[in-house]
Each structure stands twice: as C-alpha cells, then as structure tokens.
Image (cartoon, rainbow, N blue to C red; front, side, top):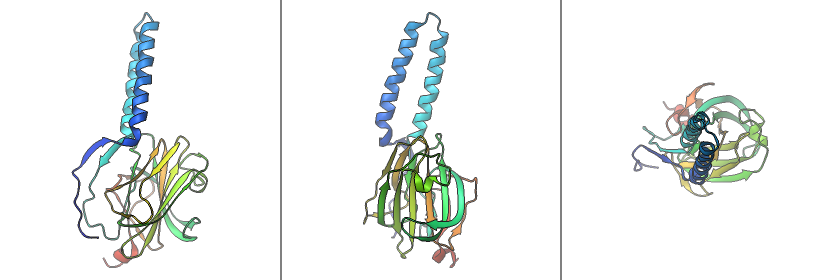
Length: 235
C-alpha cells in the first residue's frame, strides 16, 4: 500500500459522544442545583458534586478519541482494534462468513476503556453486516453469536481475509461501523465506536502467529495482535 502520511498523536472527544456528554452535563447540573436548594446542610450537595464529577470524568474518558500512529511496517501486521484486555485466544469455527475454523482473539472493553475502534490491517473492505441481537455480558462466549454485533471482513493486499466483529455488551445500545464495502482502509484509521461495555473479536487464518496472551492489556492501534502467516513464515 506504500507509505502514508501520519497524523500527530493527540486526544480529542469522539463525535459519537457529544450529545451524551451534553445531556449528561445538563442533568448533573440540574441535579446538583436542586440538591443545593433543597437541603439546609451543604453535605448532600458536596457529596453530589463529588459523585457527579467522578461520573462525568468516566464519561469523558469513555468518549475519548485518541489519534494514534502505529510505529512500524504494516505489511502482514494485525494491530489491536480496541483498548481493553484479551479474554479469548483459541481456535474455533466462524459461522457467518468463513464457515470454517479460524483463530479467534477477543478483546473486552470495560466501562473505563476508550471505546473507539480501529482498523486492524491495511486492505479493502469486502463485507459489512449489522445484526440485531441480545445484550448478554460481553465477556461470555455466546455474546459473539447472540448479541447485537457488526461484522467487517477486510482483504489484505496479498489476498488474506480477516474478520473483525464489534459485539455489544449488557450495557451497550449502539454499535457504529464506518467503512463501507469496497473502501480501501488502513491501520491508523477509525473503524467505528461501541457505546458502553463491549468487545471486539478478530478471526484470523489458521497458522497466524498470535503475539498476545490471555489477560494481556491492549492499546488500540498500538499493540500488535498477530503476524499473518505469509509474513511470519518469511521472518
């Protein structure tokens, strides 16, 4: 794909969170104003101010939109599509697109993680599909097939296809996926966003050299998840 211009590292708020942050701020301000005028003692107001500040700080962190630059060559590299923790590394059957055995790597995002998602490989988008579903806890195995989810398949320049699946959790109520079918996509670009508690699954070809372990923390667009077979075999 050649070299691409890289953006400077910075952090901004994701546009998906603007309305949530605005209305949450209004509600919290109204609540604090009401408590201030309903109690003679300042203690309830002071407690409410502290709780409100903590809750709003969590929301601000959740809706961060870091602009990160992957340092290194991108050929054959699979980078983390999300901040979080690796909860699955196993061989399994993928039943939606491939209908065969794949290496599955799943990253769970807690409420305290940034929930922006990144493109994990350079390539072309071959398949995009959103599925309505349940809202089981995101770390449960059945969440990948029963929860609301959005599936994206990307074909790398050498013809290797990988599948990325955004999965809603018990609290998540909206999955946003940006790239359409046919679009070229690159590491460093945002793939989408999931609101409140979720996971992202990667389905990779058998023989892929997986470089992460269960329980390992990941940083979206920075942590290398795996090396695809054709590149790893030439090292």
